[in-house]
Image (cartoon, rainbow, N blue to C red; front, side):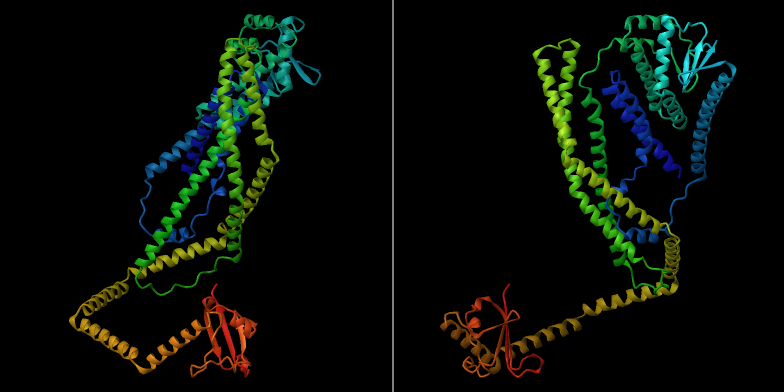
Length: 590
């Protein structure tokens, strides 16, 4: 259990590292702040949920002999975990929980302090906002729909109006929810270094959004001077949005920055494609591993069956056999997997096309950035690259917005949902009391079988069987046995020579030669029917019924049938079911 938990933590750190690296390379310090805000929040959520996704939903089934193999190996000696290892894992889990409890307590205490401040200071309501006049060093700051103001700042002054606009953006866009979410996540995954970097970026993006709206239709230069003139105390309450922070330099730089161009491809394409391809590669690799495991299980079980000496008396019958419905569910799963294969191939093909376009767009995007740094916005090369980027973006849209791609994704989702239901039913059976009872019964029978195999009586039987095998080997290699084999071969050769030289065998050969001669004289176009004396019986065979491949035909149709096409012919003097007329049954070559 502890190993699974630590493995999950490792995957969370890996996922958050990949998503933050993508943000760092392609999205950081760009002007599409709304997208960056929700990207980082989604990155945190995906990092926690993606490791819980079971790849087994999309992979092959493990050989059913696995259960037999597990039962056969359960009685073998296995290394026991030492008490030191057990205590070590327990201590690590306890320390992680203790630090998590500390951070959650710290967050709770901070929120309680804010609620106590609401009772301490007088409240004024306007436009649904609770306004508090305070003498706090941390003010001004906002918390959900609460605004804590500092008495030393005149609200009617230019500075006061700018700060009010700034804080109203925090309230309108509900930034406190982001902060609560990231604080709880930080408490739960405090050992993840990337969560602190993401937290820092989210707080900075909140300020970018508020600054951008606060200076809209206003003087950016005056707002920058106001930020520089203000004083940051260094103190903050959790889940609040203070006007001042330690990121003044970055906020001033962002105010002067022009709008980022060609951001659509940069923020939409690369990471989803990367996760799609990585997931498909993971499923493919898992399938290869399962195929190898299945082959090893088959080989091992086959070896066990070959090496098993006369089995012990059959144990009592199991409580219940596998229900017929389970086999039907497994067949349905196999059918669904076959249906998913062409869909996955189609989506993979589309993804490969999109990946090529994405790589080309990234290359052109870098060239555009170089030109943008030199302010070559009106150069022919810049305009040409701009058109090419738009064309590539349109091609990308055609791929992902096409009805074919959408239908494939819908069908894929539908089939996956159906497979989830089937897996759920199968899991329900394997987790049932009935199946657990069968496992216990199998374990008990395996122990009984092991006792029987290791018993003196069974070992005595094995020794007797080995002794009989040695005696049989000696007998086969003895001169007397070899002499008997030679005599048998000699008698068989004499009997064969006698049969070949007999009058009856020579007569049959002669009749066959005459039949072949008659067939040649008729030009291979007619079938000659010989009676028991070897004479042509076609003249008096009017009452004979003729069948070719089970269908009744006329005598003329039979005569027109080429002998080369005949595979077998049967002649019955009397027909089937006691009829008096004779029958000829001809089977043609297929």
